Length: 473
Image 1 (cartoon, rainbow, N blue to C red):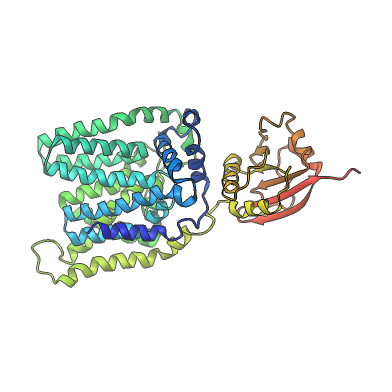
Image 2: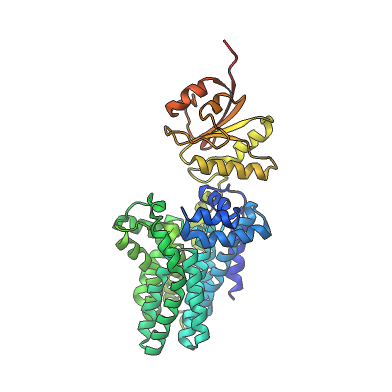
């Protein structure tokens, strides 16, 4: 039975897997994962230490399978397929096979799940680890053995290394083991959980010094918390239906509802409470709660349909209502699925289009410059797609934020003079102004004034212009 949701998740996620361009965070994954081990170490000493284990995993993956868009997204796709299958297994253990089957299928078709199955970031892997950890907890509590608790501890470590926020799942596990009222199980859980968390602590400690990396996340409020709950499915209509049913199930399904309800809701409110100290509440960070929301929603519908054991409900009724819930979520989620597969992600630049123009028209000695909100990441994205097109990167003469002082590479020893001395310069900018010199730092006005624009191409989220030396007066 778990193979059916896994297959469904694979089919949904495979559709358009390489359609959407890599966006800024995925480019960061590619940059970090293609560095040497020494280069990766140097990188994480200054930034992204909490994602270093994922980068290390992807370093090995890319070495074996390459760095195409499909390849670097494939681990996330496989992780989501595993999460859907394990959700079915948990549903079967907690409720019955039909509930497990439809809960797994619901996971497979939720828009946000297929969205992050198509993204080279660690959220899908963290979600798979949390679902596996919950299944191992249920089995260890049912038939305790040190081997089972050791396996559980190992999965807790993996979940924490993939994403620290995923460790909030332990709150739900604590609620469950305490509700069993078996001292031996509780003690062993504490020992296993502590063992699993221990290897993650050094990563968390380094991450504290890099807290500024997530400084862009706003402090959570009650309104934003409810909003993120609705967004966690990737579709407001789907989210409203699943969350509504799930909250009802958390209140009516006893111990099972307590486990799944704390898993689904608990991380949101913990992040709300700690937000004044560390603002981390954003829907993709709590992607690992989606399986719990789905299990609760399907179990609630199944309960109303009389699908629980020892009932005399007709077989067609036992399966019809959960199946209708899944189909309704598919229908309501179609616009979100289509949006997730747009060629250019919302707010991102069309790098494929820019690189297509450059590869068609670039000359041997051309240089390139970047004037954008994230100029370094934009440069890395252009380098990625130039490499996919079989072209070498063009020498960069400067990168600059809008209005900010430019940064010059080492080979531009003359600084701004390096700009004016270029025979032909490609300028990639996120500015939509007709004159691409508007908004540049004063130190760039004169060097760019020595050049004249000969080609301007406006694409989604980016403007590409070609400049050449102005003829002498």
